[in-house]
Image (tube, rainbow, N blue to C red; front, side):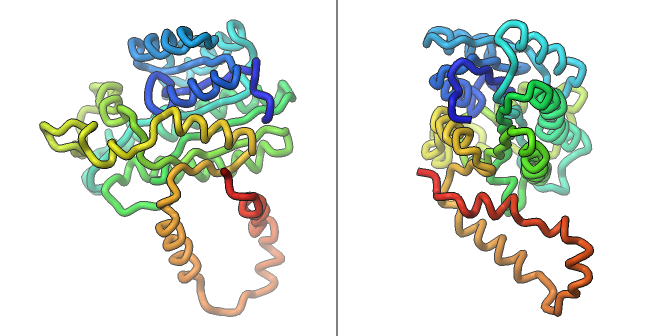
Amino acid sequence: MDDLRGKVAFITGAASGIGLGLAHALAAEGMRIALADVRRDALQSAVRGLAAQGASALGVDLNVVDRAAWATAADRVARELGPVQVLCSNAGVNFVGPTQDATFEDWDFCLGVNLGGAINAVRTFAPRLIERGAGGHIVITASVSGLYTSGGSGCYVTSKFALVGLAESLRADLAPHGIGVSVLCPGPVKSDLFESTVAVRPQALGATGSVPVIPPGVRREDTPIFATALSGEEVGRRVVRGIRRNDLYILTHPEIRPVLEARAAALLASLPDEPVDPRRVAATEGLLDASLYAREAAKAPPR
């Protein structure tokens, strides 16, 4: 999508962090923005901030796990702003702690919001984009934790790996309809993800095996990771570029290259060292199609 001006974007988890950065970046391109979030006060503040800069912004109170609420939200945005052509499924929560200590409640919460929320977004808007027949673009926020892991956040990593697979499959399915799909895999970003995770967790899911990521008495602003993290606005600008280029992967931190190379090498080294049966190749030809990845590898590096 080259021309974004006048079009409508729907962004979940839009009240702060990456979501708000996406809203500002897309609004700067002349888009009308529907900001969806479950945190009403933060959402209203975000809408006021965009409106003060001259953007057309609508706040939508939405819990992404509430499937019944999605159609209502989509219909409202269509009435008040127009049909959605860019969907950013960005709402997410975190989990930090040993995987084996994660409670059933942790799994339900993390997978419900991160993966279930994205599924609900796709199921609501992809058919509408197809029916309208005017193309569009979907951005699914995953994480570098959807590309590799070193342990200590199993619930979160599981959800993010699933989101990468969802985005890749969806891209292949929607390409014939002229609809692009990108998966955003950022590293550290200045956000209130850890605080918002606690704030939106239902009381019924109280039992948790998660541990504080920041020691008591330490401000997150004083930690090296936060101090060197990207801003939401910086990530938003990279996403705008990714939408324009129709990139499958939108990555933000080049320092992850050695880890990606090590993971790829480990996978290739694990293949059986034996002759390949050509009959198996012929029988699974459709499953061995690498064109989705080959097209991305052939692109010039983003500048």
